[in-house]
Image (tube, rainbow, N blue to C red; front, top):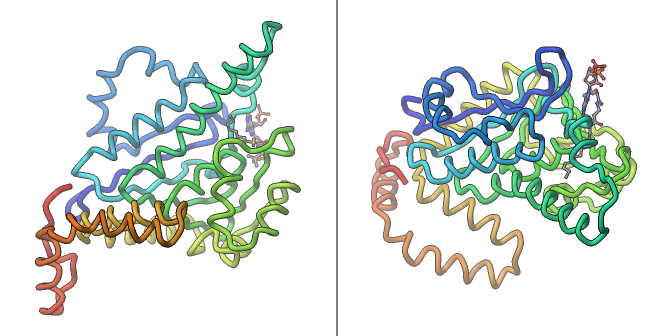
Length: 298
Ligand SMILES: CC/C=C\C=C\CC(=O)SCCNC(=O)CCNC(=O)[C@H](O)C(C)(C)COP(=O)(O)OP(=O)(O)OC[C@H]1O[C@@H](n2cnc3c(N)ncnc32)[C@H](O)[C@@H]1OP(=O)(O)O
């Protein structure tokens, strides 16, 4: 939107018209106006995604791949529509995707591995997107929802939010990111283990105390206002600086300090030559906010 450098909001709702959850993604009407014509150009198999659970991951991968390469977009806000943020995987879909009718174990297993990797990719694509992703959680955030939010950069929630690593309750070890990313988000390994092994609910205040979320808002309206204000602040800063910061934070999380510093030096040997630095330094000396600067698209 004007002045924002592009904030795109996608909503994940856990209830279809009849009230039962589905793994569908919906754009806000304003975004649909922009993206609608493009959706018409998609091949038919992509339009089948609501009916074909195994294809659902394409929506996330397609969406974030487009965002990654879209110079108009500088930051993303993900929120949920309806009663809760997300009820996690559609248990009805899961039954059909994972059921087996005989066949060779090795071939079944190989196929299963391929399916799991596709599901994993639908959240890894968020982390790989160089644009920061702010996620705003209200109500329940269950199972796959925790996988999703741990791949985001900034987590906000409402006072009524709760989080549940539910997988052990449905007989599986979480396999699309929670076990890998949650320990890097929450400082206490013991708490991560407890949440993942008992599937107990964690409510907003504990989520804040543990570091899972950085802000708790009284209600969804206040949270969305806070999320959009945060997005506005990020979008108002140099995209070279912002995207370089996200990429290097994630690289450093997964590498030693020495490797991270080495990567950073290689990164900034070109990025420090950006015109954004001169513009930002001049504005800073003139005591102007970076938001007053017009940065070129990236
Ligand atoms: C490769 C694998 C990739 C990802 C794996 C992810 C693993 C997970 O996500 S595990 C978590 C799975 N989710 C759940 O177990 C959630 C179960 N649901 C609930 O806890 C509750 O329904 C609720 C979301 C907290 C909402 O509660 P409430 O407001 O009381 O509504 P309900 O009456 O319970 O539900 C309404 C309606 O929705 C159906 N439903 C709820 N959750 C799911 C679901 N995950 N999948 C399918 N259907 C669900 C529920 O059965 C009700 O249906 P009716 O037809 O109206 O009875």
